[in-house]
Length: 140
Image (tube, rainbow, N blue to C red):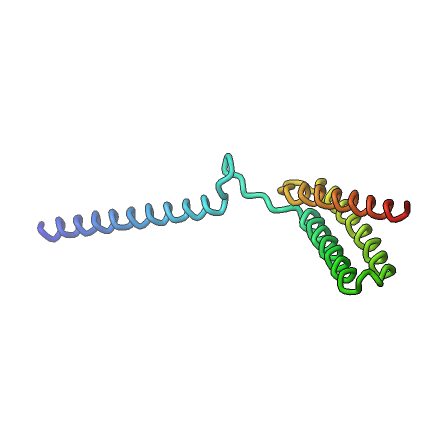
């Protein structure tokens, strides 16, 4: 009789231990799923940045770097390199135009975060306008 009672106790203990393990496993899987989903509304995954938006911001950075490089060349040569500076200015204008085009193209990508596109549009538009003003001022 005592053996039966011990056997039943062991079965109950095993069952309880397995239930506790199952609960921990379910909780761990639930936490992993929650981390994977992210903290967006309604459990949606976080959106990735638009690839063309990142490209557009790179173009804007390259254009700004090119302008800085031309300013440094003009400073160190005391303004005796107008051909190089003019060519770099035109290349910078074309680069900013490409960046503007890339940002607009990036706005068409579906299910993406468009903040890089918006930043690229703003930066490249300002660069295009500024370089155009400098170019037209040089002509007049």
